[in-house]
Image 1: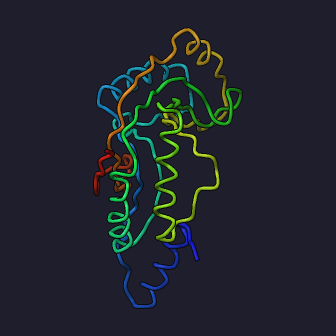
Image 2 (image 1 turned 90 degrees about the vertical axis):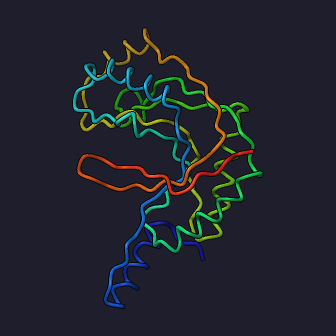
Image 3 (image 1 turned 45 degrees about the horizontal axis):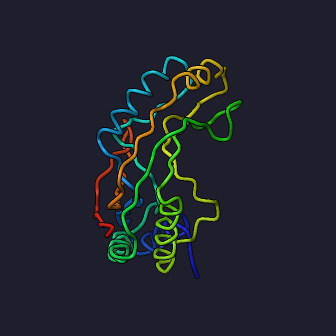
Length: 210
């Protein structure tokens, strides 16, 4: 029977508690890393937009990535199995190109909660095929498949409370984000360490696409 990341976390905690000890868990995800030049371009764009958005928490561009699968908090043994399973991506998925463009918002422009940049792959289905491969690969280890449609994007900011965003959209219309294209030739299993100043990301393993 498949179980999700949160379910696995609760089960592991109860087992450890019964044994009178608490084992360390690892918070992790599978992602596509971004080129340094792209992060720099995004940082510059964020600086232009910040004065136009009040009550908004902006994401540090240094930690930006495209999440393919969030694994949650898991025991080290399970992460070891994930690490081994992901080697199957090598040779099964070929490199492809991604273009970052188009500034938008979830759920919409009138009452935005998340501000983002869109991501499109060439060929169009390439990034979705990679996502599906990872979903199938990790499903065998007990991770539930994502029910929502995969919508690759880069989260730039989260809106903390409603406000007027007309100046933002007027600026974006006149000054759109300049599209940036790069080759995706690897994916990364990343550890996320939560700290007061924000999450710190450390690579666990890297997998080449070829």
